Length: 116
Length: 109
Image (cartoon, rainbow over all chains, first blue to last red; front, side, top):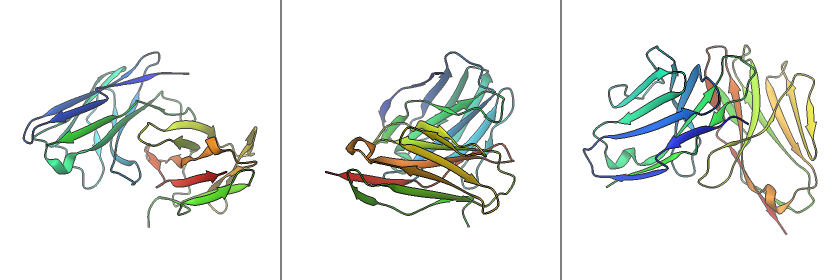
């Protein structure tokens, strides 16, 4: 099946610094990518949806200036957590799919972010 | 009301039991439906897509009821290895992929 590679798989950073997470589709063109966040024992919450070449659409309550999403190509999307704080510590995961509405979504391996 | 809701867990069942999960959705124009499985601290993995006519894959059966706006997952002859969190994923008309909150299944010997 299709592969989505997410990097890094885990990161520890100091409070106030920024962290960039990359999500790459390795063998298909991801016209749409989704970014999720999952706190312990909670569900995967959609943060934003991005289409290649367009600005991301953020869900209510997600600060677009804090979580910068770039989807500059059909194979790469990045999420940058700016000025990270301990409450941003979470499991971040990306998903990608091709254009067809009935195709499954493929998930990256996830990034476990810990802000200290 | 959440756009996608699942049965609350956890479900604790003995090996060999049959267990069923439901997932309701509020947007009647939702287009695609999937069941995913998530093991602890890992990314979700596709278990099966849900087709209008219903579909079966070994011990797993998925069904879609558009009139009542829910999908279901039936697991027969549960194995210890089936223990995981089961998530429904729905592609809504607005182009978003929305997860249910997940149902935790624990299969005991």
